[in-house]
Length: 352
Image (tube, rainbow, N blue to C red; front, side, top):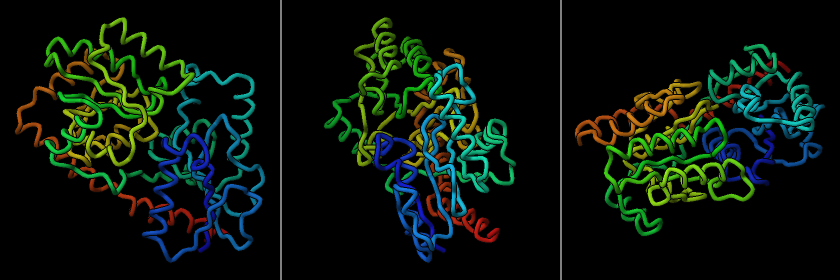
């Protein structure tokens, strides 16, 4: 089978974010675990080889024109989530955004296979795009194969040397869009500090925290100032892949307080590195969080209580949670992603 895969998400600002990471790992996994097939990478749809059996667009954005209206080959599209559509009042789209969304919806109309990250996202696609469930395939993602649990003391030394963090810390890595609930996390941390070690820090990693012209960032900085947390919260900005294992392994706990996710990959990344996890009981996180300590993302008190509880765990209790996480995360692998993705390609070839 000859598969052409669009790589536009590797050519723009998404290269280091979720869609770019997905595209890069997917291509690597297909070439490694499904090597009997031929893969062609392209950025220009007009240059897809004529002998292609299936075309895969692994990047979809409701407000950008990422898809061709006319598809000359059987086409698979990955739609990670429709959060900006489901929670439209938090993601104002404007006239241009609305026009592009309608064009993108039209582009999905004739598609016979959509891959999505979770059953939660599948339900949203059915509802907001109107596509039959039989055309929507859930393929769970996986942590990078390079991520692994490190000896905690060694990891902490690396974190201290590079990021000047020399105390216990609560970790979050990701974006700062509304659905990530960063104000809730910060308010909860402020409340939890009354019980926690006064030197404890909240460490926030992600390109958006130090990027330019991001309104949410200014709101977060003002909130931190108003709560007097400037010395207790550290921004890391973009975290290179080679540092992730160290940061997760040395952290006291990882927190994913989102209102909604399409998947929530950092939850599994943290588990793969032996870090206990606090996660929202919401959307896709209910599917993948496994042995995480589940919280109500709309309750600051609930998030704060979870932080205090996990930070005060005995060594035995913490080790038990770590073991459970390491066992749980084994079921998620890029080998499985590759095999299940090729099975979706197969359905289109059979239909030809």
